[in-house]
Image (cartoon, rainbow, N blue to C red; front, side, top):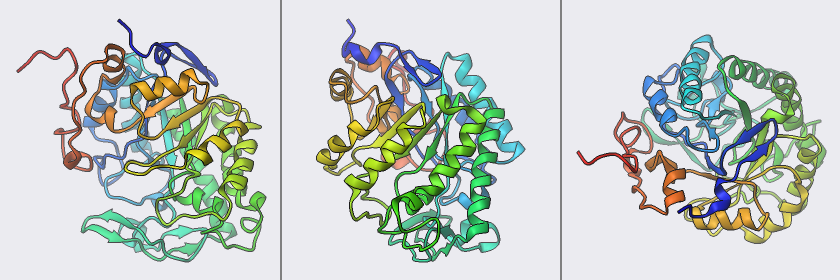
Length: 362
């Protein structure tokens, strides 16, 4: 018997048809090499989860200056391309689809993680009241430098180059990470962006960096293979906005006009109540494929599909522990329990060793 049947109806997302609506969220796992090349373990990890309607990779930095945590992957060198190509080939061989999440952390970084111990860059020179993970464990983020015109130009070029690398690596598309208090979000939200140039002040100016990045990325992949992730509810990495309903409403409308493959919204963070009223108020402003994220299970995901609120739902922690998550939801089967101690860093334990539903007992 198929449970939550609406999750298993195919759907068109931009230029790609998805076989189901159970999608894999971006999940930072800190298991890449120090040079940002994905490990061979990652080939197995992603291929195991190819039954997802689509996979979004862990956040992947577009440049050396975009790095904010130890052992996260990159997508800007030939070695990165070769490493990711092994992964996309394995996912495609298993019948899956995989998009690369393009990431620049901005001020959520530490000098020890950046070339020549450089200061992080941001819309601002004010440090975030936040921590990041370095070789020494959790440390306060470093004071950033506000990007000047040349730095902004270079950052846009970095996203364009990363998109070309992602295409060369065989990805089906890309997601521009504009959520969770990272660089693009640091420009979008006026609690952080206090600039008085063409990238600050008015909402149009604060949206300019995202718009110019999208111009370049769409030029590589086409709008039908590009998505954007936003987190209008804020809550992480010292973010705030004076009027999120008004401002993000306009952002949704601007993105809607671009004919993107999808909009991916963080509706709730683990352990939080979220902002249901804000999420509901913003939803009508985007008419394309809407991807919901935020502590969903099979039943609640099916409910938002059935209601028309979402077209697909991304699952995070459940996909860590259950490589065959769609089938478990389909059968209403018992779930493996995620081991939080192995979420970040380490080896195969808690990464590629979670059992499948039909794995025989050892």
